Length: 253
Image 1 (cartoon, rainbow, N blue to C red):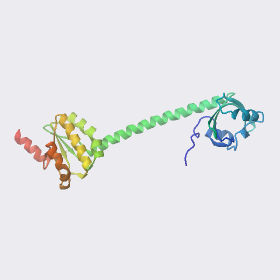
Image 2: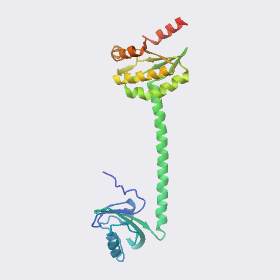
Image 3: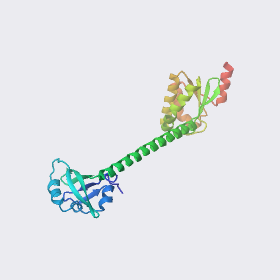
Image 4: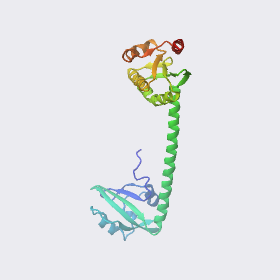
């Protein structure tokens, strides 16, 4: 069910049709008047002719001062009104004689609840950001193995969303480790999409701009079909395992 746009108004408010039948009202109006059929039935006898005469004027007018019947008593209010079209009239009641203080207090409470809600939303965002950072870390942990080498084992599927999500975390961690060579291990990787390969190429290019070499290990046969163009176009190094990379490095030193 669609919630009325007037529902949360802190003042009594109505939407009427061109016969002055109540089409919609705020919660505050409902608390004061219940569920009236027409607007005029809310007024005392002295205010009805005045309301009928002035509210029919379609041009912009000053607020109309009217007396409303509530229970066994009356209260005075300024009625601000505007015709949205030939068939729709919006009215807002601003009570007088001290009743405005009660409405104002309600508005202050409403603003306070909104501030509390904003604060809670901010805390939820902070918690969500922290959780996302943890997911990135678990999806692509950066492990320093010494000698300027950093290992990044990838888990799950290699697609555009995966690479785009982990890229900021990976680049930052590699910079902090002052890595010379990054080894991207695909042993635990599932499906590799062509779009994911393009994003992986972009990541490797970013590392190159940083002056960092990249090597890929743990390539499965179904990965190789997608990655062979990457090897040819970027002269990227593929190795059987991290051990073979470290052994080669040790032999050269």
